[in-house]
Length: 490
Image 1 (tube, rainbow, N blue to C red):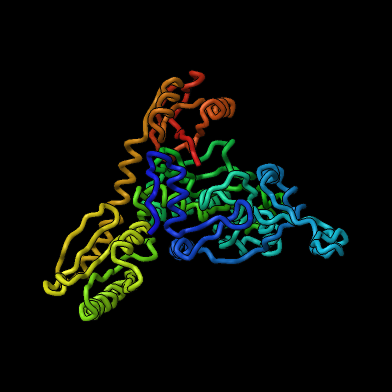
Image 2: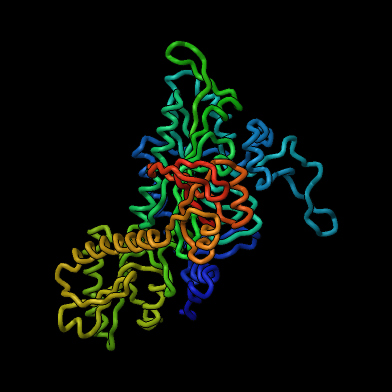
């Protein structure tokens, strides 16, 4: 393996970039701002996809696919939507190239599109134009559709997984007969995301609502989950939007109710993306490399032989292959690394960097004693145990690692969430103890903007189910009914 990582304390940003590269997750592409997701990184995304896809299907959703290209006129139909995405849109203007006769490939100006096409930044407009043909009466509702896709948002400052010009995601788009149904859907999908983050990613999240200025463009209300990274910055890990009738009105999508009266349909949209991989990296990993929650690790257990002779290797391989069979029967993703091109020490460092939760080694002494050595990635603790029932031991160990990682992240969040009552204290805590800050706000966009301009901290959310607490805005002194969650964020 190459030299280790810079420490998080010395340079968190560089540590992250080095880790993504050295763990073989992704790399920058020839296209500025875009990334190549390498097989190991994509294997993590596939695990996330599989779990989320089943969660969506369990809540009644079906997958579909809609075009990558969206007519520009569609965007102008919902004013706040176009305003929200205008600066990030990539636009297709021509459909052909030609040779200019001098050996250069140029755009064929005779092949200009009649209507320019937007490369999908999000799909509300193309989908609601489609839904118009699907919906005539209340019998056609609800429509519960999800799509797995790529999107393009022309970001100028990029970071692998966290913010790139093109990224992978899923986007749910649902249509309902009543506002209440749509609101319930919005809240249901937020909870699906929260459960996934906490139970699978081992990443505790705060459930909340965005302020008006932070809402999705075109939404009536935006719900979100917010996670705290180890450098004290927040990461928006998922959003769920109640769109009201905005897009139905923009595309004239109406349905006949049971009473025969026509009304516009009520809508939601919701999504998470490959930035979840970045969040998982930053929430758990250490100066030695990735720390992956077992439920999402592409390799949960790696078996490494330590031997001196070919005979010893053959004996160890026989035992290892038997263990592989036992573990696979327990639905554990296991790899036996019998490469003779690398020494055990190299392999230890490689799998530590890649965050494999459990390393199992078998050496000559283990052959004699009927044992194996087991090392866990999260705490780096080692123990030697009998080979008998090792499969069940590892099942329980993986469960323990999953819980331990979550509890560590939860403890970190609790230790780095502070209440403040004055603006001076807010500024001091923000600089000296980065993390979540709970403070009173007067509810106005003017005060929200002032705080953002002066401190670079934003209201991450208005926490759901938080206690109502009468207080005074830390900036203006005006009355406030509850504290909101502030942080600097990715």
